[in-house]
View 1 (tube, rainbow, N blue to C red):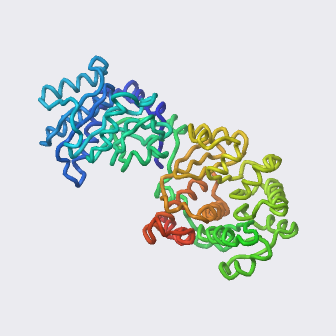
View 2 (cartoon, helix red, strand yellow):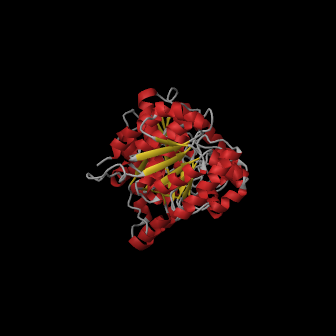
View 3 (cartoon, rainbow, N blue to C red):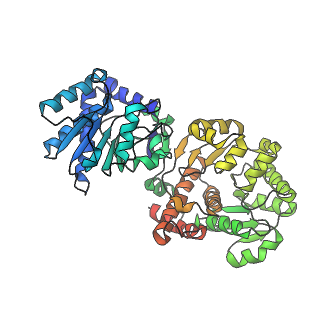
Length: 495
């Protein structure tokens, strides 16, 4: 499990290490600089002429120490200091004096195109206002230099909490951060600006009790911990999933959801759909059971299943509305985990009375526009403070939120936050969300608690997309390829 901190939490961890653990700030600065220098030296490319651009804060101090370490390794290093010298922090002034003592060249207004490598140490995660004036000009010039760019801690100009560009930001090829990744490294557009992210262990530790409040990120090891099968199990042991999906002409949504539930390990899947879809679905997925949306069939199916997936391709007509209302009421009575996707969410936003039927084991999986409709807010407003958006959603919609985006955000019913790092832009293809809904349903039916099943499912969905990318490439992959990638992702997580 990887922990993801916001700026406030990182500052608290820094202070805890200095004041409670007893490691001096200058030692942490040295270790941070060593982590950056080691990564630059370890990189296969020759750094050539190196320019380290430093601000007056402690991020600039890190950069000055990086310059000295690279100089001592025999590299041709130059330093540019931006800002008023009398604004330097005590630690940064100390590092500047050391640089001068080593006679490392300090340059003014250099031509950035003359350098092979540029180290960005202008601003750290403490930036709170838009970048303007000379700093903006410097950042834009760095981006146009053609040099290979390393950022210290975070690309200068990126908001460490949200990933937003604060007026202008460095487009790094690689970023070395310290102790923990920050939310701004993972949320777009910050993730794009950070380039290849490396996290260096420099001795900063958080108080153990604080970790409960950190965002988290599932990794392959977590999948291995949670993916298990009883050797003496049978098809009933591994869970039964009811998939209510697919209106007329939308059989693919039902197929992808049902197929993904099986790929996640479900022992049995029953697809309730409109009569017109049954023949084609039976040809596509003969392993599944089939039923229709009549109340008698739904009643028996709810009594039979261990989890429900509702919404993919059902449309927003009266029949779909009646069916969803029944499933929510019956599911709540039985306390079934229920994944609500696509048209189920559109129906809820169009018929607010359905919201009153939601309960703690519901899993809502909106993409950006669906979230906007559910919350009645502009998409840009929702992106401004994504964690705050997730908290506000939870106050109106019980259960777990899966906010599908380039970096999917998960908020569990208990309040834990997750950011997902797996996946790629090739997954922005029709049917990808249906695969995720079915995958979540299969994991929930196995008996996993939603607090673990949901972040696991989102991680595996992204890993399946990464497997599809390796096979087909970003441009050509389809939802069918993602579906085929699920066994590869699960096999990678098996122990």
